[in-house]
Image (cartoon, rainbow, N blue to C red; front, top):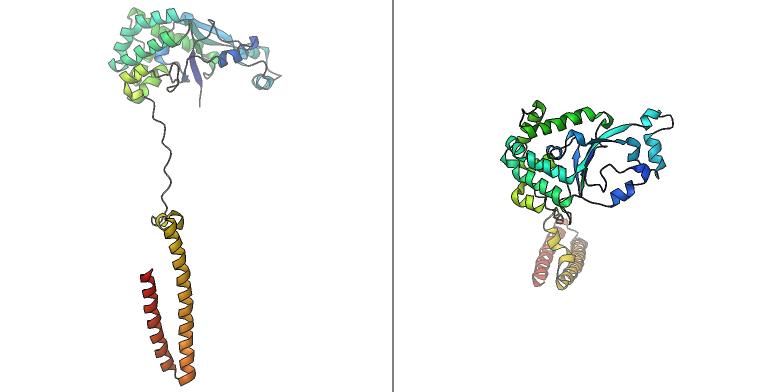
Length: 308
């Protein structure tokens, strides 16, 4: 099941608010966006600290112009506490986020291994060049997001502990060990999320990362399928539509001549048998005469086809 989480760059140090009519403007503005599913990737967390946790109203994720959507989320009998529910999200300034990534870089690379160095460096460079003054993790897609504060604080404190070189928490250590076992083709999206690799502006993975870590290169588009070969491979070659016009014309003339000769042969066979029997009243003589006529017609058909 999909539980999308997004790393984005809002124009203000907070979530867009639906009740202020900001959603349409926010989403139509475009801008960089990385997506993960049901978790906050490790390198995203390197941008933040527990102090960056803020809270948004669930109702502000809804567009006030879409009454049907609001009724679905909050039926008429919903309790007021449900309507006032909040959930945690992350937001910080880009300057502070980049300061943290610089401070945590060496320790984090030491833990995950050299294979992740170009990914981490390209990710930090992407944040520095593609993102605006604020960095936001839009968490509303997380499962049970209204109850996510505790584990979110825990995960960020585990990352912050790297600033002081203290012992790595067991949960973070397990996550890192799983990343070490990941295939090269999976390492980028598992640590930085998924972006738009073919975007004209700010693609992710960036070209510099693709050059340094070719395993993350986007797959080439599939070529159009070739026409299926006919079951009878000779059918196309002998089809009148595939022949030269003169060849097709000659084939049609030959077919008509064959049919005429077949009817002539039938009449000769019948006439020979009936005529001989009428003259001799002998079945054996009639059969012999018909056999001679058959041989003569067969020779004639062969000669005609050779002449074609």
